[in-house]
Length: 308
Image 1 (cartoon, rainbow, N blue to C red):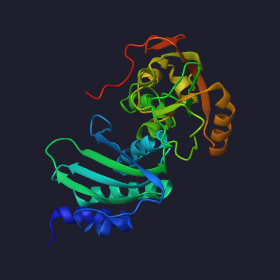
Image 2 (cartoon, helix red, strand yellow; image 1 turned 120 degrees about the vertical axis):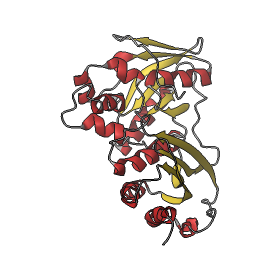
Image 3 (cartoon, rainbow, N blue to C red; image 1 turned 180 degrees about the vertical axis):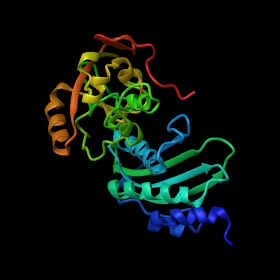
Image 4 (tube, rainbow, N blue to C red; image 1 turned 45 degrees about the horizontal axis):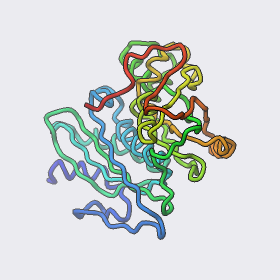
């Protein structure tokens, strides 16, 4: 009988790219597209921190993959492959891995990526899942956090706050009649497919909270950010919840946050319209100390999520 580890790997074999060599070797081999630069990003999600113990197993790998793909989107990169590390309690059975692989298969097809390899281990602690996504971008065309200039507008895609509110809903702390908020928490939508090089001055994804991530852009540019809380786009479910403070600081949005020169705003709107992605101007970059000044009817207890 094969050891349990090999049973687990067998569940993932159908996800493997050709370069993964059937998941039978110690490493993968692949050739990047000619003339392109590689972009690499890694993220980890932990049970009880980034997902709940009773979340459907099919959603776990999908969330892991999507938060990494959001980093690809923020860099303007096209994703290719990913490496996966799975640490689960020893008692975890093959059924869990089959469900986990089914979810990953859905998103591999949706986003055009495939598995190169990785590792599976047992742990006495919570389930811990890590992925490293590999993508590519034209030479010198990767979007960066640094680069915003005074006078640039501050723009964000989609809507903000649904992920953080979804966590509260799953904890029973607010109503979510149709499950829309919980769905955004469990399955964020990476904003891939936008061609933003030459349009935006700087970009990143919103993962740690809108205000905190605005601060990252401000510090990278050495500028102040003026954020108009009343302009932040909210979904109908978020408006119904009435928790603007959570929407601005909660995290788990995985929308794109961008600095855009005034003369590029029309191009930004056109590109987002082509991709079917909503876009909203929520503030501006101005000369001053690198900080975020929030205006509007909201009081924040904290700026965002801390990883420590």
